[in-house]
Figure 1 (tube, rainbow over the protein chains, first blue to last red):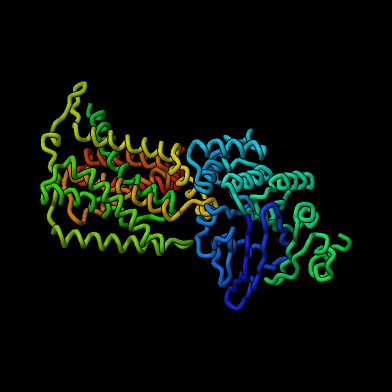
Figure 2 (cartoon, each protein chain N blue to C red):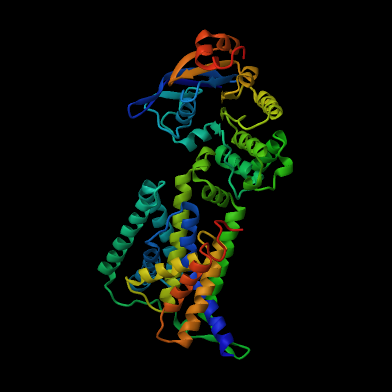
Length: 240
Length: 288
């Protein structure tokens, strides 16, 4: 598995939000994406999923160019995103969410989708809530469902968008463990997060964006000790 | 005795009204827009059968299913090539597009068929009745009513049990997020528009069998469909059934008490409901 992003660019009018960003992540690896507010992190994900069309650049998965495909077609190729603010379907049950993801996203037939749904429920600890509707879940369970949904699409690339926001310290640890357990040679993980230690613990490399440009991409140790990064981002938290 | 007679006839007429509302309700529930051409879809469907039966000599029982399939196809195609392009945060472009469609279809019908009354002859079925406990009930209204209830049940099953239904409900809940789960939203919308067009066409066909139609009958049908879904609760499938039955009852009662009132009391009921319960009788956007 190999995700290659080449020369991705996007401007809204005169404002350049993503400026010639290239990065390659291979299966089994997790890439952390950091940057101050307005660095273009979320736009970067929007361009990868295709929900915002890119001005230039390519997104290739295992050599297949996804750049011209619709968002739903990219999902079916295995490129899926979990949102910062979980957005469950209010009237669907938790199990139905996963069946939907397994049929529409992974293209499984009815029987296989049911099995996949139960499997993912088990893995994400949602089995007890399977019959509840999305609208009735509390925050942590919504976050779990958000992750479970992406898993049930049988992803090859997962984009995690600040999924630890709003969680307690203990819950963040549980989440980091869960994401660690997902790592496999068949899966590429990209993770936007503000909490530096959560990224350092999980990610093999960290990419730092600033004003839409890639400032540095290296191992977590090197990135967090980099002078530019400290000045830009960690400056506010010395010795973090 | 008369009261029971009125009750039965009102409910039977209400079944047809509910059918007019059902397609419109589906569209609103899933796409959050209204289809101004809904009445023309209904009347156009009836004219498809008129064409097949009167001009091509196709038997009625063949013409009806074919017309429903054609209506589905037309609705599906219109959504894919036209209406999907104008859907967005602002409902106005879609509203105006369907308004334009209604004018185009109406003029097309006048051009091809003229402005005369047309009816579909169903022979003895139109007049035959059965006697139940001293009441004479028309066979055809009972058939209409049964078809309507059956379709509501089918739709309910489809929405809650099938894969397509799951996609439809998810799209209705959040049209942005379904795309992120690999659902082809454009296709879901097209399916719903096709289904809505076929349901409208069936209602139009039944109307032409029960009485007569002209190319201008669409507007009045749209109005009834609107009243049905507003009374029942926008976007609620079972609300549409309730809305249709209530409106049918009111029309029949009003015509008995005040034969020259026309649809007046139906409109008054709508006003009353809007004042007392603006969210309608059911007032929730799904089928549970």
